[in-house]
Length: 71
Image (cartoon, rainbow, N blue to C red; front, side, top):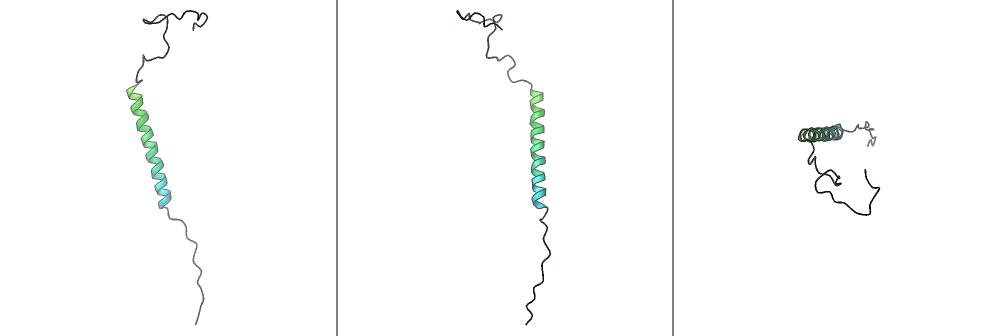
């Protein structure tokens, strides 16, 4: 009986995982591009919303004892 083993040629990895990864990266890039474009078209969400009141704006309160804190 002949028990010789024929060596197998080394297998190269199939291109499917690389194609899936590349497709995923392209999909992410497309989504970020579309999101950025929509954000640019929409503009600022609340342009007058600020956390700091200024003395020339109505509703600014004088906080006594805080001299020297002017901007």
